[in-house]
Length: 268
Image (cartoon, rainbow, N blue to C red):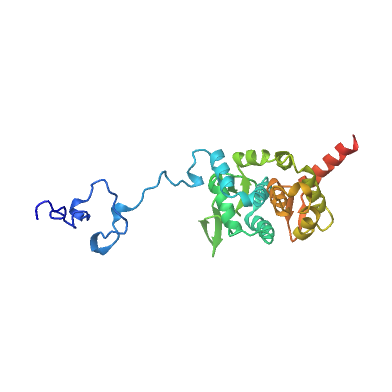
């Protein structure tokens, strides 16, 4: 029928066939490749290389990267660095970290944490005198058996951990008192809340989150925006002012900070 608008209509024209596929269309990773496996050429590419902290060029950068990747373990890592200011036996360091782990949720065992610090060049293996193991020279032993003398390999020295120069520099830059001051200064609206929380934790036996919450959660300054005790406990812990050992207790730096503000208040 002449003039019929439907005469030349092909219902298949609007369908998309593989032989007409645009070359710019990205293939799906689920499309079959050889042997009915996913198409290997369609795997997504990363925007950048995924680097481990150990790939940093300098020891300082490796140590900083390690600490940045483990923010909840700073107290444990710093305690390990402090323990290694002089040669400490492997077993002694692991025992110390094991005690800290009793009150921290940490998936790493003590030996793994030590290995991570070693890979970051913060600590290294030494003998009991602090000589790096790769520099220890031991004379072979002269042994006599059944009247016959011969040389025997000397036993390996006991392994200790000790700070490297870069590890010592990292520890020297750690000033928890300054971190506590900065923590309180950042939240200019809440200095009294921080001080209340810290005073509760400085009591004999420390404090609990429930007790701290009862003391501060209803304060008018915390109603808008709403803040809870957990906010201040978390920030004080990260600053090194308090630590968890079954209760929230003030650290030596936290107590020093309290003494400083009480002295300042008394001099007014």
